[in-house]
Length: 432
Image (cartoon, rainbow, N blue to C red):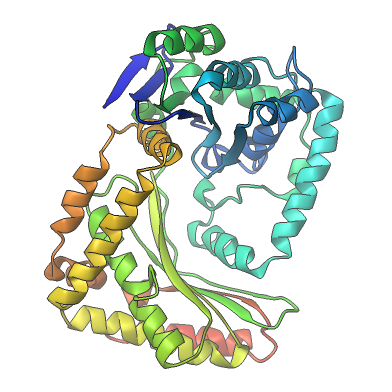
C-alpha cells in the first residue's frame, strides 16, 4: 500500500513499505524538462542533471561518484521532455546515506563555473554522438518537425552551440524557477522504517524552496497544447541502411483510451508475435528491426512504427505497413489473437511491477503528472476489458493516412526527396 506524505515545504512523498524485500529504491522527480525551455534555454534541464553530480558544498564530484559504489548501491539520473529524475537503489541499511546524498545534490550543488565549462564540453560530445546515430536522429528530428515551434519538439540534449553558451547564472536562474518543492516528488519502495525515513527526508529535503505552491496540474496548464503537423523528414547519412519511422498523432498522457493504445501497440509491433514483425520480418524478410511504440505527453502524443532497412526496401516496407494498418481498420481482430495480445500486455505490466525501481517510477511519474496512483491490478483489469471493436475503432480514428508523417535517415542516395515526397503524398491522399 502506498502512503502519501508532505514535507514542511510542501514536497510530496510516496512511500511503499515492502517487508519481503531487503533493498529499497528511491527517486526524486523534478517537473523540469525540455518542454519547460525556450530556444535560448533549450538543453538546460539536461545540463542541470549533469551538474548536480559535479559537487556540493560538502562533497566533491569524485566523492559523489564513489558514494554509492562504496556501499554496493547504484545512483543515476535522466532527463525527459517533461521531467528530470534522480534515483538510487541500495540495501535498506544504507537508505539514510542515499537520502543524504540525493538531498545534498538537490539542495546544495555548487554549480562551479569551471566545472560547468568542462561539463558543457562533455555534453557537446554527447550531442555529437547522438547526431552520429541515425536511429537517434530519425526519432528526434521527426518530433522536431511534427511539433514545429512547440517546445515538445525540442531536443532534450539541446542545440550544441546554445548549450556551449550557457553560463553559471543561467543555470542558477533555471534552477530557481523549476527546482522548487512544489515541482518535486519523492518516491520510495522497499524495506524501511517509515518514521525514521520521513525524519531523514525532512532533514535533507525540507530546506528546498517551496515555490509558488501551485498544483502541478495548474503548472501544466500553463504550457499550450501541441499542434500536430503531418511532416516528411529526410537526412542522408553515410551508412548502409535507412532508418525509417511512420508516425501518427496519438494520445496525451491522460487520455482514457491509453489502455486500448497499449493493446494496439502490442498487436502491431510490441513483440515477436506482432503483425509487423511476423509480416515484414518473418514472411517478407524485409527488415531485421521492426517495432512500434507510443509517446504520450501531457500536451500531445505520437504513435511510431520503426524499421531499419536496405534503401531498396523502403518502398515495399512502407507499403506493407500501410496494408497492415488498413487490414486492422477493415477487419476485427480474432478472439484468440486479442486474448494473446492482452495477456502479453498484462504479463509485462505485472512482471515489471515486481521491481521496486519500476514501482517508484510509476508512483513518481503519476504524481509529477498531477495524477493519482493507479495500481498494476487496476491497469490490468482495464486492459482485459478492451474489445476487438474498440481496437478497430481506435485504428480507424488515430491512424488516418492523410495525417501520416514519415522520417527517413540513412543512405538516401537512391531515394530522391521529390520521389519520396510524391510517394508520401500518394499514401496520404488514398481513401481508407
